[in-house]
Length: 282
Ligand code: AMP
Ligand code: ZN
Ligand code: FE
Ligand code: FE
Image 1 (cartoon, rainbow, N blue to C red):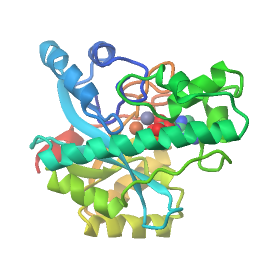
Image 2: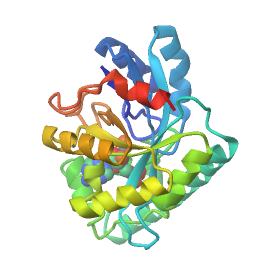
Image 3: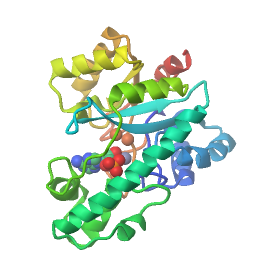
């Protein structure tokens, strides 16, 4: 079993890099990709520990993008895997700009929540994170302060795209993001396509356009994909000549307690080693 999508406490996961590596070893994973949002620091901290434990650790990241240049465009998450090249210097410096943009969004989100009657400061939220603050950290504060019953409730009422206090991220388009990943030596993959929220035809057209811009893979197996959907995305990846990938999108027990490393939600994820071999063939 392998897992090509996971988060540590260096982004919005709840396990430290060390705790995640220990869990991967206990789970018997043959390979694990750490794909924190906007940062490599979890991967970098975990690498010597993984090497000592004999775990094949894959260098990855998860990036936000807008599906087109409209300010109100939906978002597509892009996973980038660096299986044969270390990330290039320009890519790494673009990442620090991305983190500044995230910090700016976080300021605006705290202000927007206050404008919506929530007693919250960015400092309250930043205490929950380490190197990077994300909406799941806001969700934890909202739950602790009694504004929401659960993480899901906090997203529904305050943090999600439909909520009145929602603040857009000023991300690059998917085409631009994919091109940057390619230029930086990475393999770009559209993560959890179910979350695009598009109908089948629009989703297919979006993936075809992204492929023309340099997209190389599609996340077929994911905790939010039913078995039938996984079969659909596997066939679609083959048809569009995209490399299939998969992972649990593990965030740790205190962020998404129903998702297990390696096996997803109630065992709905099982990623074959051949998916990683496929990435490495490039
Ligand atoms: P951010 O990168 O700070 O905008 O936060 C995005 C992260 O929030 C995602 O990667 C998910 O982990 C989480 N997230 C987004 N939407 C939801 C939702 N509706 N319910 C629970 N978690 C969500
Ligand atoms: Zn996350
Ligand atoms: Fe994601
Ligand atoms: Fe993720």
